[in-house]
Length: 243
Image (cartoon, rainbow, N blue to C red; front, side, top):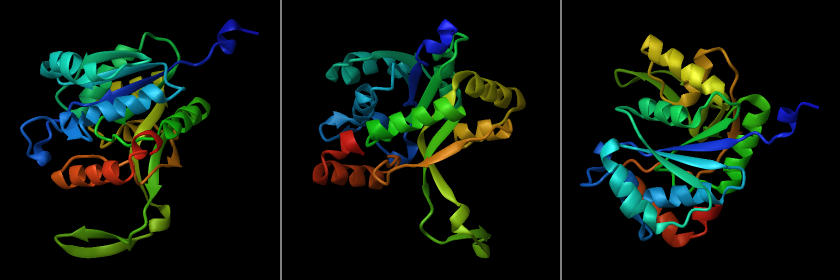
């Protein structure tokens, strides 16, 4: 048997925390706002640090936040895994690509990409997503749509979509590293901006699996989201570790 076949496939996490938080309207970036007495990003990092399938964590932040992130925000956590802080790019897609470059050294492996402002991610869900990506090369977390969905033009309904075929995408999203790197490089070459990383894989014609996520796995982008997150933290403290 080839020795390489017996070695475990490395799994690295890329946590993207490069947003400006314009919709939040706060004086500091949304990923550094306090949630339960800790910055939002610290809760996210804790979840990945607790996940047994993750080997290393790459935290992507704006270049001018690196010093604060290392000395102020991340110093409040005792990590069990290697955490490397990476300078991000102008847009989220650029930041993810910088994370991929930091991880990639032409070896095989899985990268799990996650929004830094989804602090209630469940470590077990991270594992499930990564394990499915080992089998299928691409897997994301999402939720089946529950509401009726309307297609609208100029504030007028054009038709009602079949919600049985519709899911909303979340993160984490896990991919075989050479595939996601190739998809990002192809998008950069052609000036394509995707709304998530899975979209770039889809453009290449490669299949992407989707598994059911959690309604606790909210993304904090507005003051209302932060208030909801505080409520989750206050009423269900275990959500930070169990999702």
